[in-house]
Length: 68
Image 1 (cartoon, rainbow, N blue to C red):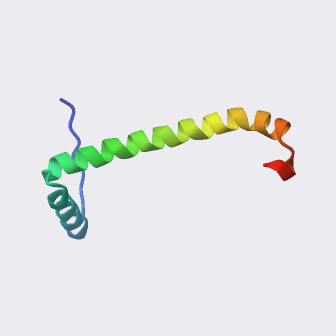
Image 2: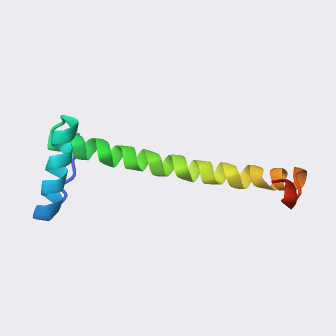
């Protein structure tokens, strides 16, 4: 299974350990989940921006500026 070795400062590591403890997950699981969730969130936002750019011209054409 692919793995990644990431370096953190002592302060960053302490914050990560604290957040992992609050969620009841191991540090490894917490860092994995947060990383994957952020990648998925960015992909969703990029898709939403692309969809908005696709439909916006039609919305602007149907609704004059004072009616939007």
